[in-house]
Amino acid sequence: MREPGKWVRATSLAELLDRQVIGVDVLGVPVVVYSVDGEVFATYDICSHGKARLSDGYLEGREIECPLHQGTFDVCTGQAVKAPCIEPVRPFQTKIEHDDVLVFIDD
Ligand code: FES
Image 1 (cartoon, helix red, strand yellow):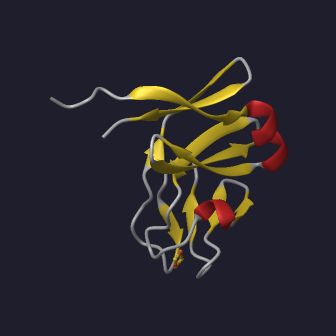
Image 2 (cartoon, rainbow, N blue to C red):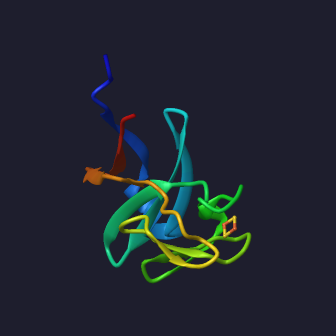
């Protein structure tokens, strides 16, 4: 039977507000969390185009630029915005509890 998924702490809100982009392993899943204009988003951390960590990329507005070939993704939806990226990266739900940023992990 499939696990229902659960909310897991990814980082502290204070650290995220300070760094804006944080890559973190959450239950074995590479996740990147972003702070954009006071909102928190999360996507899969591995670029859909190749083996690069989006958490090593450059965040401008709501777009993250991959460090390898400079394709971009919308961090709110995971959709690819700029080539060579075409396939989306998976978005994760987020919520804030006290000073913790949580992401929802399921299969
Ligand atoms: Fe990310 Fe190519 S690996 S754009």
